[in-house]
Structure formats: structure tokens, C-alpha cells
Image (cartoon, rainbow, N blue to C red; front, side, top):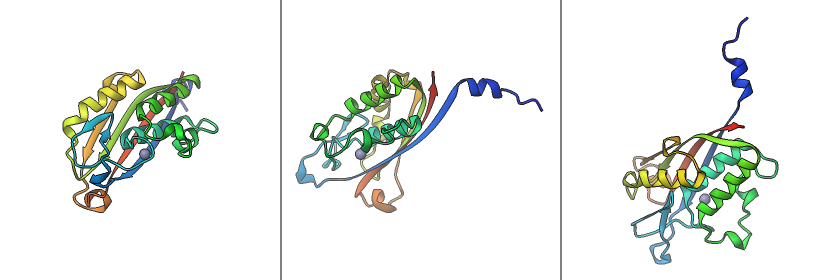
Length: 176
Ligand SMILES: [Zn+2]
């Protein structure tokens, strides 16, 4: 039986990865900034967390590591343990660039990324393009290679009650 295209697909190893992250909102008194996709979003509270709590960047890193499946670096916790004081209030873009270097060293390139951020409030869609530009610049890819959507959860669940924000990401990697 002739299998069309199978040889070509095998010569380029493709990997998919799925990443997810969730952060609760901190109280407004905590004075934390709301940072999503590297954009400072005007809101009365930020997300609680060890680093800057950039939920979208964390989901993308989780997906990248999940797809690469590097020994000892299977998820964010393995690469950046939250017991390490270096990562307290860390800029997630510095962490993202470190993940990207790990991948490049292992011979992977990012082919495509798609993401969804689930938040009842604030409205995130006005910041989407800036987020895409930030992620593309950090990973050295084109803006067209990253999709970011924002959605609400119709007042259902923790996102809908305004208790926190979740983010999901899928990535497609190619092995060079
Ligand atoms: Zn996180």
C-alpha cells in the first residue's frame, strides 16, 4: 500500500504540547500589577504567585516543555523550582527565553502556538496584539506563528466568579 507523504512527515519530527496555568487574584490591598502576556493591564488587582504570575506565559512555557519532553525538564516546576529565591517576582519573559534556549539547544524550533486566556474581567482582547508581539519577540518567531484569544466563562467556575484567571496553550515544535 502506498502511504502518501509518510516519509516526509517522518523526516521532520513534529511534537505537540499542551500547557495550562491558573492563578488566583490577590487582594486589591496587595498592590500587585496584573501582567498577562507581558502587558500591564489596568485593573484593581493582580494575580497571586511566586513570580510575576503571568498566567499566559506560564501556560506557554508549560506547553513548550511538554512538547520537548527533555529529561529533567518536563514542566515549569522542574526547570524553575518555586523554592528557588531567584524566581521570586521573576519576569516571566526571562524564564520564557530560558525555556526557548533549552529547546533550541535540544534542536527544536517553534512552528506554531495557540492560546486561550479565560477571564471574566477585565476585558483582555484590546491587549491581544501587544501580547502576540511580546511573545513573538521573546521566542524569535513571527507574530503570525502565535495566536492568542481571550474568552469569559459565562460567569461559571472560578474564572466566572472573578476569583482567578486560567490560560491554555498548545504548541507545535519541529525537531531540526
Ligand atoms: Zn503560573
